[in-house]
Image (tube, rainbow, N blue to C red):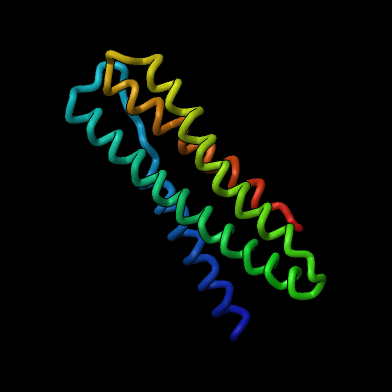
Length: 134
């Protein structure tokens, strides 16, 4: 009975997860109106916020693990370097996406879209790296 209940909960979770993913898929037609473009950029903002939240969860997990390792080994460099990598990655995202933004000017809408797509891709890429076991 408990096993069936767990399977039902898991199946419900998968359905909910796929529904959330389907709701956050952003699409834009080639001949989009300004209001459609605005909705698209807002959708990208939602995806970026979700990706940042997910990444933040992994950052906190790794910080916790590295703090425990630091306590066990006495090596204080690892956590310091990890924190520096987090800060440097944010600077990398900004610089990497800014030059893409500037390339698309004076079309501010396309520039903003390219910046957001770049930011989302780099956040997701770094999160995949954070997920790798220590």
